[in-house]
Image 1 (cartoon, helix red, strand yellow):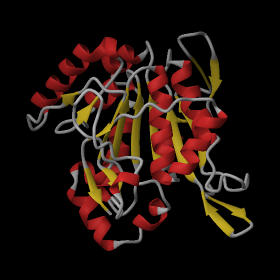
Image 2 (tube, rainbow, N blue to C red):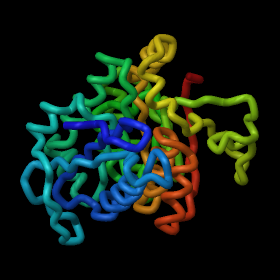
Image 3 (spheres, rainbow, N blue to C red):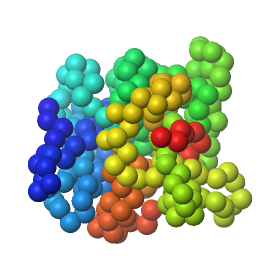
Image 4 (tube, rainbow, N blue to C red):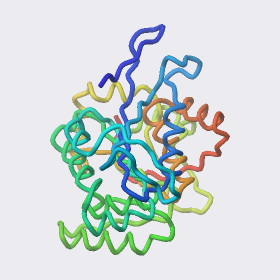
Length: 293
């Protein structure tokens, strides 16, 4: 799997994204983030600088959404596990089928656990785990949200809290802060910069008076961070080895969280351009943990 494309200025790193689908997933929870990520460019005027490459994993060659839409998978879960270290981002869409996933502890639960384990074993690589809607229930069930903050579809806040409490009893009793937010980012990478007022990810004052949001300034820091020993050491000290964990609310929140991912891993300029192309209004979420790298 190649993670490099050529541009006029030489090779460009392509961020590898794996979507893990279950039967009766939410079609828009897949299609929205795919549209955002595949429209992102490292250089907005250079189509050769594609920022993300998306791969779809499922238990069978064709997986059907709750709407009846059938999507062809690129790989099965066996291959996904085998090649998991090749991916920088793992995205878990939600949907009505998530209840069966939790009840049977079927995929993508094991894939989620394996991805988190990779980060703990090798904190030098910057990895991101993101869920859309009820996909966060799978993260909670896997025990990855203890000691963190998270959100989910508004209809599932109570169920999310129950699942997190059950995971805490099975684990080290650390609780999860279930927040009523558009999206929530844990273990962000951010560069405050000299002019904090110009940092697009720092909300000095929220309209509702709630907590501030601080996230990493979008830049080429994604490529640089894996090379810096100090950053790696700080990342290793974070929960889950510094795995960036993003949970989002309902369908449109998935668009917003994906725009955040573009801004954080590519550039803020690229995220704004994607929003313009797709005619999206980017509604920001909150960041609750981070390191200045």
